[in-house]
Structure formats: structure tokens, C-alpha cells
Image (cartoon, rainbow, N blue to C red; front, side, top):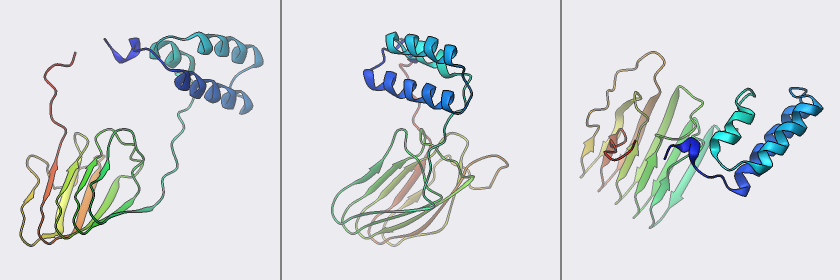
Length: 184
């Protein structure tokens, strides 16, 4: 089943109606267009139905803070899925670890700085395909730093993630998302 055929929730319909109403208030839709689209939105069953209603409207970019600090003493700091990545991300944990999956995130910047301060934990960072990573300013006293097949040389148009900081008794792994074998 494709994503376009997937069933929508009431929350998905509500989000679409809000976007349509915003477009009307900005003068992008006439009263008649708004009424027609709202009627379809409220009776939509699939994502394809909803996307057809808004595909000619501008996409709103979420506002992203410049600097975000994530802290934990013992637990796992985890971010994944559709989240807004700040320009600079500071992650600190004494006994915990960090998993940051940027592969499906909204990243409005061309360079993202991630500063790690881990004492006993490890960090795993998953980059979007094509992104590059610079780990020259990261130090791991007793652990490994692995960037596997991720290039470090900046490329025009590619997201560059710069990782700095330290893991005293932990390590760092940076990679691309794993390939899924059973998707269509």
C-alpha cells in the first residue's frame, strides 16, 4: 500500500482544513474554492485526497530555534521522524546515550553543529542520504568514532553536519539510514 492510499485521521483532516483557511485569509483561495475544498477535506479518506487539495499552496516551514540544548543524567536522548533540527544542537548526558535520526527531519540550514558532552554514553547519528559529516573536533577517550561510508568533504548543496565535543567512556557512530528490504 502506498502512502497516498493510506487512511487519514480526523487530526489530518483538521490540519488540512486549517491550512486551507489560512490560504483563504491570505487571499490565495476564493470563497468558492475554499468551500469546495473544505467539503472534500472533511470527507477525505486517504492522504492522496488531502494532498490534492493543498498541492498548489505554499508549504509552511516550521520555525526552528537557533540553539537547542538536550540534557539527561541517566536516560536515552532520542529524536527521530519528522522533527525540526536547530542550527546548533547541544547534547549532554552523564550516564545516558543519544540517538539523533536526521533522515526524516526538517533541516532548513545547510550546516548543523552538534556538540556532544557524554561521560559514559554513546551517540548514534543517522544522516539524510547525501549529507556529509565532519567529526574532526570530536574526541572519544575510551570509545570508537565510526563514520562508516559517510563522506567528510563538504559538497555544494549537501547538508554538512559538524560534530564536536567529547565522550569520555563512550563512542560515536554516524551513518546513513539502513536500506529496507521489504518496502515497495
